[in-house]
Length: 389
Image 1 (cartoon, helix red, strand yellow):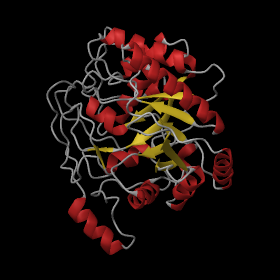
Image 2: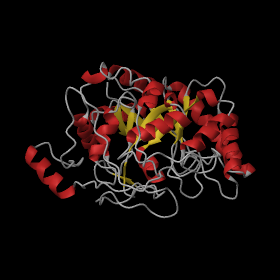
Image 3: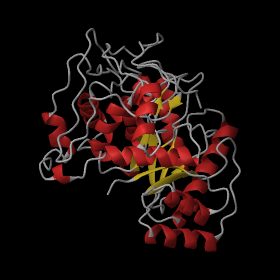
């Protein structure tokens, strides 16, 4: 089953949220537990929650992802703010007990005057103070772009938090394609090498969810600006490889692109059209085991992330001097054709409209050298045509 969905509003209730997701062809969804820019949460309605759970079960909607408010900074050193953050996260997790199988995703936070080591310690302490022992909800830390002292700009950051937390065994990771790309991990030209590095540092068993977002900014720019699928520097060909990769294809995928509901429906339909039929699973059974696949992967020498002496210090994510070739999409019975210019998520259902939209809006991804993450911006791999969210 291809678990694909998008962010859906819960403003009209949870049952209404489920119906909106089902209406656009989603098989999973993400929602905010509370106001994304504040601390207010809607009162829980047991009848509404029960109705949603029934509807989701009847319509094969699962792997619900609840996103924490953006204002929660687990790395804050200020006592008053720490208290607010920890109490809010704890309340979120208690609320999610009513949604069986749901996962909780949060941005780790950002340091101000703290050292990287101190920021990691504070994030781990906040998680431990907020995570109820009785909670069955999986707690996910999101990969970040590494802008402005963000914790999570490298895989080593997240690994350090997990090691420092006494709840480490209960923590997972949500990989955001826009964030890792702008952090310097070249998922366009060397996805296998990035996954191998992730497995080495964190272990692929911790990867529980993927945010699918194209990037308005270039590789290694450390700037978080989402673009619609196929209209940014990552490009449609790379997304076809991501959703069909044997190590990723069974994970749930969530769209956070700058879209309205209709646009999300179009992107879901587009991604479903690029999805292989799964007939190649038997041929890739060995690759389905993270450690074995990671060991057998042969990453490009020019795209291998630099090792860090200290996990909590932000290392170079990509070190290169030459352009690398685009990785081929995995072989399946029903081959995904990615050699042609990508169609956008805004194409009509007719072939004529598809051809016109692709000619006007599809960026052409160029083979460019991966840039070392740092203050300087990397070169563009395409010219996006969408505004920042």
